[in-house]
Length: 305
Image (cartoon, rainbow, N blue to C red; front, side, top):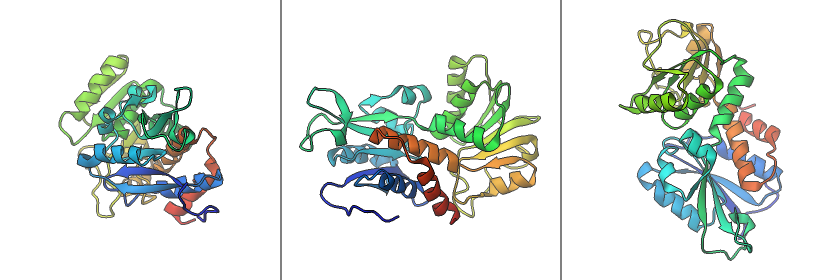
C-alpha cells in the first residue's frame, strides 16, 4: 500500500498489541482503510508480553496514539486497565479496541485526535468490544446457519472465545458446550451463561451426538506444526454441521482441512477480523469504514490474491 502523505510530525498512530503478533494481517487492512480515508495515520503491530500490557497502554496514551486493538492474550486482562468501558465491553467481558480521548474546549470527551494538539492532561483510555457483532456477522454470511435452537461447541473460551459463547447464547442456541485448557475458565463462562441466559444449557466438555456449530477460538493453527485442538476420541468432526475457526492464517488450517474432509461447512476468521477492524476504525475516525478496500487488502495479505 502506497501512501500519498509521508510520515511527518503530524502523523498519528494506532497499533495492535498481542503476544505473539507476527501473524497478524491487521496492519494491511487498517493502513489500507486509513489511506482510503485520506488520513495521515499509520497502524503498527507490536509484540507486548502480558506483564507489560499496562505499561504499553500507558505509553500509547502518553504518545497520543489514536487508539489500540488488542488480540491474544490481552482482551480480558485489559478490562481492569482502562479508565472507561463501553457497554459493549461490559456486556461481553472483553476489550479488543481502545480509543484514547481528551476533553475539548467545552469539557466533553472526544477522540484525542479531535482535541487541541497541545492537550497534555486528562487523556483517558476508553475500551470497546467490536468482536461480538463481527463474529456473528461473519458466521451468518459465511456459514448461512440457523442458530436459534441449535447446539454449539466453543473450544477455547478466553477473550474472543468467551465473547463468541455469550453472543451465541444471545442468538438463541439451546445448548453450549465449553472446552478450555485453562483450569476453571470454562466453568467461569458457564456461570456467566447461567446467570445471564438461564434458558441456555451450558455444559463443560465435548458433546455427544450431533451439533450445528463448532467454534475454534484457541491460537492452535497459526503454526504449521500445531496439533489439532482435540482428538477423534474427544469429538469427531463429522458430527458438526459447520466449523468456524477464528484462525485466519493459514487460510485453511489443519482443523478446517479435516472439517472439510468430514463434510462440514467451514469458514476461517478473516470475516470476523474484517468486521471488527472496520468497526474499530469507525470508532477512531467517526467516519464510515471503507470495507471493500479493507477486505481486498486482507485477502491480498492472507491469500496472495
